[in-house]
Image (cartoon, rainbow, N blue to C red):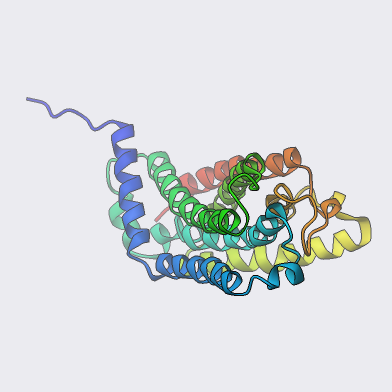
Length: 268
């Protein structure tokens, strides 16, 4: 009697579940969860007890409030993407894990897609939690009808796409790193420091229109979609929604393909 082969989809589900459980057991997941609750919850609680701060902070309307609060999403997407994608591949080649994992009768494409799906689910869940906290404040401080639900929905979908783009970029850097820690740190440095410096220099000389290559530029639209002009982000400094979505999609698909190719070529 021959044993029935396990399908790629079944292996994919196992890869997703295994990777997700490994994330839930790490300090970085609980640290990010605590950060979101501390910042989002802390701001909400503070404003609940200091309603007079609304006028001073420019929160006269629900869109202005939500736009300002959601300005944190661009930073959050980069950090969670780096935390959950920076060592997703390098752990196979920088530790002894690869000698066991890659010897199993599972396609590397299945392993990679399962890990990516798990990272996106966990990262997206953290980003979604921040949206929930922001909406609780928007409804509580103003009213249900005052919340621009359509704009918030567009902003959320863009935030998920930005997160996917950052994850693909992190997976790509992880594929060329032999150390899980280095892969994670390099991703944060490249995005938060390197790309930020390049964007600032080019933007100051030629204007924000030349930043079409930058996912940080695309991330600005997450908040401006809710409020066309919020504190610290002018509408002219952020791309239109379609362009932000296109930049993020190119990052998500393009860097994932590169990571896939590099993962196949790497040897333990």
